[in-house]
Image (cartoon, rainbow, N blue to C red; front, side, top):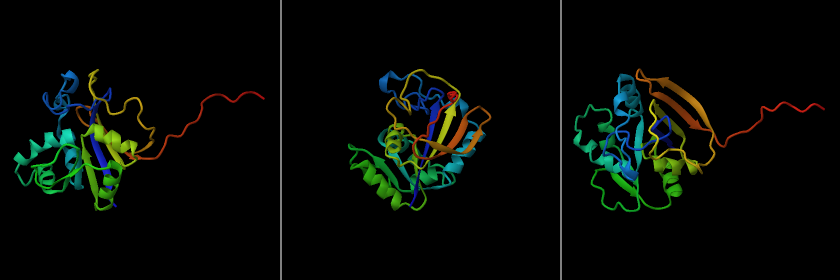
Length: 208
């Protein structure tokens, strides 16, 4: 059975919207698109290359799929570590409206998300990778379907935008498995899902 591995870019205030460019995702009048760009460096690139050395298949939300499909098929260098995997490996997109995907190797998932993704994990030998797709990742976390989360936190606060964890998120505990910081201050932490949170108290015991 494969592992579902999510890689997400967020700001210090938890915003995941439009890291890659001004027009990537302008929902809600979002004006901060492209906020991750100033922090790209060799350390960042090395981590991304490491992630893209491991996928067996990709699962994407509709918005991220559209962004990727408009860009990566045009990158035809067989040595490009990202494009070579995205273009060659199976891609699954969760969408109730996409019917005729043009990107080769794409399958649309439009049924019950829990059943479809569970079946997908069972028939994937290796990592089923989710990139971006914040809304989809929230749903997958709520369904306890994410095994590993690579969270890249950028040293910037935006104040507006869609956030990864909002009110009503399912309480979830994680186990920290790896961490590093890039030369430009992006903090990369990797977590395995570890069930529900545990609770205790720092209160002093009452005198008896």
